[in-house]
Image 1 (spheres, rainbow over the protein chains, first blue to last red):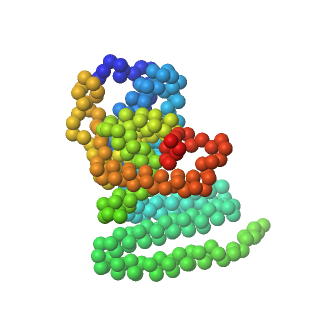
Image 2: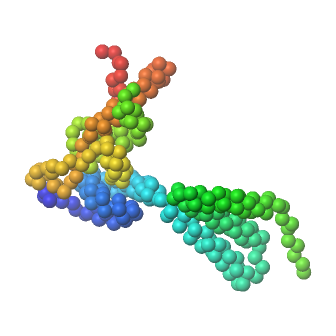
Image 3: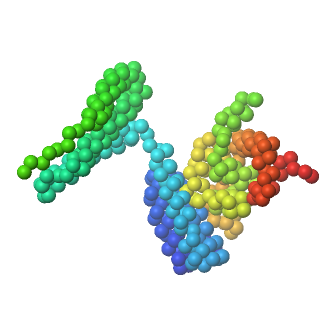
Length: 184
Length: 133
């Protein structure tokens, strides 16, 4: 390393923090470009330090954070395969269902009869997890369809069933509910 | 339009970051940080590419065959030998030229509709397209 590359003070900590933050990128991207990115940011810090001191280095951070978040999220979404998406949705659906019911149950046990809005949360939570499950199911069927003839057969079976399920859910939501009457 | 030009035009429009990286590399091979500085200088600071955007774009451009990583490493006395240098491929040059033509057509349209004649309008640089002199 050349002597004039040496950093000091806030620039050193900024370069270290940036390297640590690179963990937001997928591992494969980090392995390929992590060192280069850290080196580029270190050079940015070095130049900012020379021209603006600690303030110059700190001024780099808003743009650096924005760049990290946007690039990392785009890299994650870009690398998202249909199979991974199916897996995530499939896991998210029962997790939401569980959370939804736990909240309702805890409220009912500890605070008594849940208010109307909790019932709404339970209903819309139910629709949310069911919707996610149906999307996961469709994505999975589409992935299977791309594997061959039996996959297309699975998709053909899946579509009308998913459609009728969604229709039932939408119909139940559209039906006006009679407000509950509290009895003394 | 030749088939090769057709392939080049299929990649258009380029994102501002990718086009600026191509422009920076048209001046010769550069490493990542040098590309960032070149882009900032050539756009008078209007476009600043962070390391995340730069290396995502580089990854995409390598996959599309617009640029390649050079095999040669600089003299360690002059620069950090671990740096990776990139250069434009012939295909990358064609794509950059195609994008430049596309943008030139847009500027010509804007000029035709007198959008560049608005008093006080400053493009921020001299486009040098069909100007007097």
